[in-house]
Length: 400
Image 1 (tube, rainbow, N blue to C red):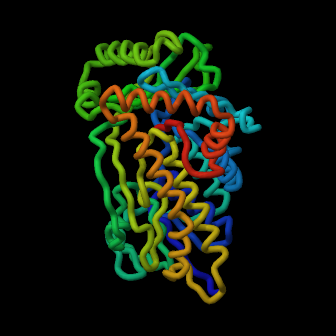
Image 2 (image 1 turned 60 degrees about the horizontal axis):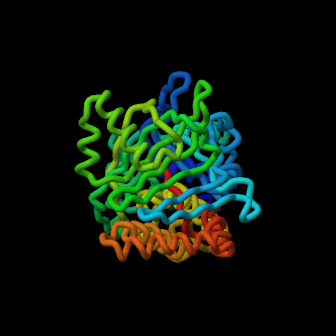
Image 3 (image 1 turned 45 degrees about the vertical axis):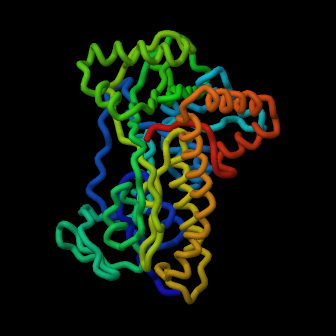
């Protein structure tokens, strides 16, 4: 088998995980991206974006050698989940119900990327500090006018993937008309490693467990609200913004964790639904470049890591007469990801539409359904297995 070259476009978590996994699998791989610049944080500060890492994703990150490079003191395990409907419905999931230690781990994006970057240095993966500009056959032309040829280009360059556009890969997207607001809060009552979520009809609120800071419990908020409301909150003066969020969250959470105190800047991002054709000759997409789902299920990162793991498996198992960029090989990757991606799209979009449906009958139906599911151990067992990444779908909110 000839020595084939793979170039990964993108230097965030998806690009670094792709390059690291491919190098560990024995491929000649390099990254094309501007230089990595870790976020500088003061003591007690946490990155604004956090992810809910499933059991399957944790295992994959451990195989890559990145998991043990992260500080365990900055990781918060999730032992249980509470999901509240807008009419009294409630679903409780506990790790012990499926003989698991944890359902997931809440991890800062910056910490995970720093660990992946350190692992890349250990394995000597070359990093080409430049930007993708255009694609000419099997050659990328960079913004710095470098010409880089490869047998396969991996598009890990995010939702606005330049490689995806240049390769002519089909892409469809629509806006939900909502935005996600993220921030960290101190809370009066300990979260006890429980992830909390409320569907309120016109918004979805999640409070995710974070490590304690200076003896105080901390949670990360992810609040999906109409875009106009998000714009209003983001435009508020800091004191007014803090008071508004503290009052709103206390009300929406029914005082579950007591009073909340804002301890970080507030960030916002639009929520979109996106899909793509995933492959073209010599090009494969992973992560947000390949798909984007509503974050209410908290599976965007896990879905992306699943892409990477599947791509590495398909490339490693191809026959000796097939190039890594051969469409027969890449279509195997596309088929391998078709069911997990479709299932996650259906689960997240379906849940969003179910809880956004107006009217008392719809509210009664969805809340009654939650109460029924909460009384069915076998069904809860399946939900927990899915949340762990054993099969697609889950009810856990992540930062985006």
